[in-house]
Image (cartoon, rainbow, N blue to C red; front, side, top):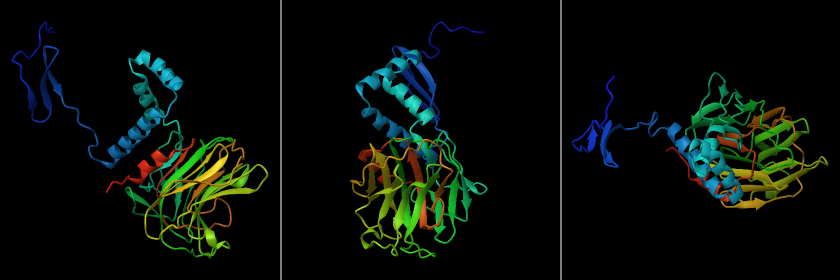
Length: 316
């Protein structure tokens, strides 16, 4: 084997060769390097990865100095800075994500969850249509829904958030229901422990009609709500977010967080029996009419900047 004791290139070449090889000089050494080529350039998969990177880069700025020092110490063995180790850990583990459905693939009657918990959802009737990001599922308001029997939803009395895009097609559904459920959880603690609901025109409270409501049960068996101040338009993509943070419910639709009731303190210590998308998680079904895209559940409270960043995302 030949052992080089001087630079392979000695003529000071610079530039590229066929867009694949780069010639450069660094620290008085002539180098030839293969240019990195992404496996999925300009694709939706690459955009998803970039969006995740931006999310976690922003979240680093919100960490305490003590937490940053913890990551800096952990990164020493890998020769990484605190930020680099933070990004390595977050992007590989996605520790804040309880579920994430892109809603863009129907794979033999299922759609995949990209969170670490792999909460695959079974598709019942919902069909693929053009979505806000890519493809998404459309629900007929009659009997279409998705169901997951998940892990990773053990929030206890802590914070959690739900976020996604909806495009409702009607203010009524085939059953004449008062409400249409976007997503809801049926847990051992409660048949409807929490849910995000699109309120229809048949609701008994006129002020709630055409708005989104976030519901969460209490330990006393009652319900607490946060109600969006904005009417949800038809045939238009709307970003919503809902969260329980420090025992108070909040809802976001196109503007800012609106605080709702406090003391929504039910202890969600066990995983749900099921998560339903497009209907009530038990009965009556209360079917959602329209499309749902890019649905996520977090085991922490989202802040406004993270929600606003999602508002601007689109693959088109």
